[in-house]
Length: 180
Ligand code: 2AM
Image (cartoon, rainbow, N blue to C red; front, side):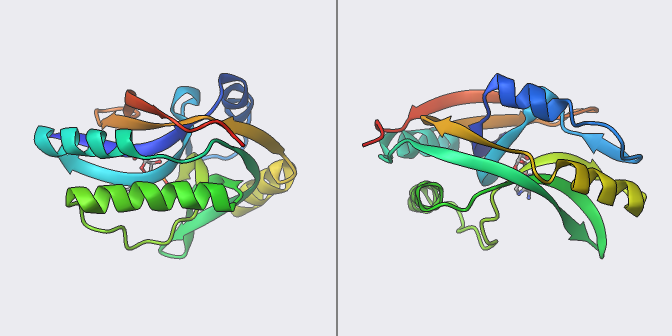
């Protein structure tokens, strides 16, 4: 079995910059710089045959390259407490269309449809009971950050869960067609 997700890697310069944000919130587990990415579709554990079918389906997908805009901070709540700190990604049509094409390809392969709404984001940290004034200060201090990222491919990642942070490996990269 292999744990998979489809994502968009970030350029090293942006990862370095986001990595430098990782301070100021006690009880935060910051995403290691090398793991920072946008998830297009989480797949989960599949067998090798399904993984091969997923790869074949993604390799056939055609979609145009685009420029992704990132910026703005926010949190997802769990049990009414903030548990995920994220950097926002604009919900622009080219990104949503790419995500929809990935979703259709995976459903054709036989995976169950994703029921959760697509909320594009880059997870900066996971938190357990963070002090709210510190969290709010972080958001206020980083909310104006924004950047543009050329997206010329997407990636099938495997995720290996061990004792520490997950290890993400790019199993295959799929080029997008040249911007028109
Ligand atoms: P997150 O960053 O918002 O938690 C690899 O685990 C990626 O898949 C993460 O970026 C994670 O998003 C995303 N993901 C989506 N659904 C998931 C799930 N049920 N379990 C683990 N990761 C999930």
